[in-house]
Image 1 (cartoon, rainbow, N blue to C red):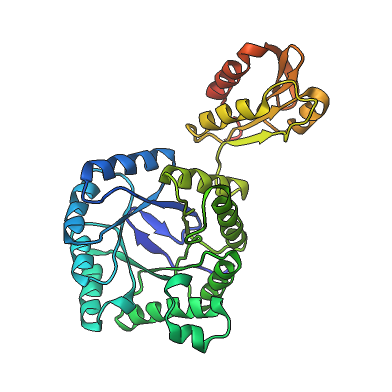
Image 2 (tube, rainbow, N blue to C red):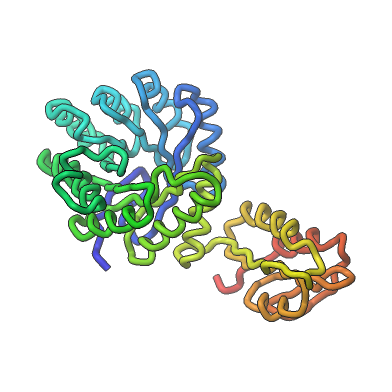
Length: 348
């Protein structure tokens, strides 16, 4: 696994071996109260870095007030205007996201000087929808064109003596995203921010993002991740945490639920929905099983810390696959909630 250069973003050190969860607000940055409230919601569910759009000077001016009221690193997303980038840096953001190709060279020098003075990292990146024609014409493979476009931005900063760089190469295509990030990681040692852009909607976007991000993380590629969804950004954080938990890169609550069949004695889907909503409130690495019947439920739920399997009269409560109680039908969720809330990880 390639060693990654450490880049400081607020109180975090990207490249320290941990994969950090990022999201982006979707309320107007000028509305400080709404932005802060949304960031607080994101932080509560596990967001560790948040990005906001600084689309004009008024939005950039709001960043100082936002930064003063939040507890996680703040990233300003800026396009074209160096004045906005400098204003954001002076406002105290921890990182800016720019496209150096959209900023004149003299102005870029001023942005870099300000970033150096204030200790602010710069994220550069490209996506498949914004590739310059010359890159597409020069390179046969689109993922190479995407990666080289990103690397051009990296070199522009390096020529100015700046190395606190985070890199991203995103496509709406899973394979292009994976191959482009592999290419970039092979060329440079800067931290990579990985994810799909414009992934789609609903389950489609979740599946595509999980495949792309999961593939890269299993190869040790990616220091921050964002699951980009056309949804409440809180959902982005939830999915990102599930990806990290599935790869054992983060201790998070886990739900095991059977796919159901005609043998099911309880409404698995309804109960599982309640349990997953409850688990979202906890950081403890508890594993919970919701099984429809005892035929395979006890065995398949044996690895769970706590679980239930449906019976004709209700359910059996399990602890590490061992039946510890019989539960009436109308008390199943209440009993599970009590057991989850009282559970302690004695392995910690």
